[in-house]
Length: 588
Image (cartoon, rainbow, N blue to C red; front, side, top):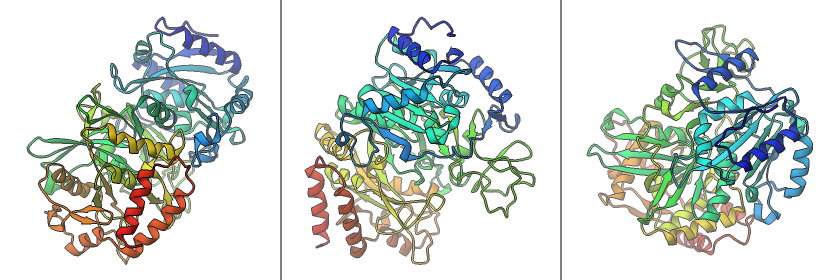
């Protein structure tokens, strides 16, 4: 049944693989080595098995389209659980199950589930090789889609086994598709066991366990135990014309422009500035010997939503997906190219929608599903930082917390200090993009981690607060909002590449080149210090984007109190003090 086990494998790993094989009963066990020859063979097999559709070899070399089952089209939070000894450890923002009960049910569902199939053993490395940041995971799966996606998203194969070097310390991931039966769909995270079990889905992050499951839910608990951070953040390098570089980490909820910020192309008027992508979605951060916060991107690929991505919103990402990319649930043109809403051009006649049906512009259903996405190697990104693989990581000078808000939250505000900055991050709330849900409803999402933290959110915020005491040179913290609207519903700020102008002001603050005006919610720029060269933006719209309105903040603080009441008693006292100070500043 099993191929020969690589000599670099640990006995613990080999024993675990055999245990899972005895449970799931695959016809064959294949150990993945991560080679290009392996990729070619598996891709050919996936095409022959109608799992993938090869795309235009001239325009999109090495690219494929995957269509998921129509009842397996999105991440469903109700089927994801954090399994800790007590419900209190998981906290009120996570679904909880007792570990023993969860393992019993998972084992029952997995039993004999791989009969007639191949079980692929995928060792993978999160973080640069030879780095203290690096962590090892192994995913066992019966899905070719998962194998080919994990090859892109991680450093998979022999490099991970070499790093393991016989150790027992690795994340244990089991993924069984179970014929993609929604009635048996279940994904369980066991932070105390460094383990993940995913059942009944072959879609996105339910199949690619390295990303949200290991990279954030499991890693956040490991990080707290070991004294570091695992965050839902992009990492970028901002370089001015003089060659100075500042590294910035930014936490935004999904749909708020995190990826486009990390790959930002400067506007023509600021073309002598540069943005270098270190990471687009996950950041692991440690305190260095110099007392600064250092960060790496643990991933090797970019996983991004397709709808709305265009040459206007993210030129570098559109260049990146032109080769060796795996697309899921987008539309297919007659020339075997891809299309989705917001790509910037009309679909040609004969285009097939994400379900393989003829698509017309007047169709009431979308050409690409709202949750359609792609995974592409970070090495494809023209703006990739030369420090992407740096074992030491990059030093973080600023942290941004941002969300989608049509009112209340200013375009940018600098926190008074670390504790106030943690409060700004903890108070984050975001409106849903139009494609996702009710744009009027604000969903509280502290640090963009409410559904991704592997333990109690109150304790998590407390850990953030205490971390500042260990930093001798803490980064400055900023709140940003690109989405504030005027009375007529138009955006006050143009966003996208023009956001570099706000990053430029932040760089000026980091170097002390400009002053700021104090407000009840933070330090605001003087409008004269925001570079509007080459931008046809009336100064009154900038003022409106920066305005602090007491009535809006009164409603905001009341809403925040309702959310805080849900959290545990572990919520740090420091945040209570910050909240009371903000309310007092508005005389509420």
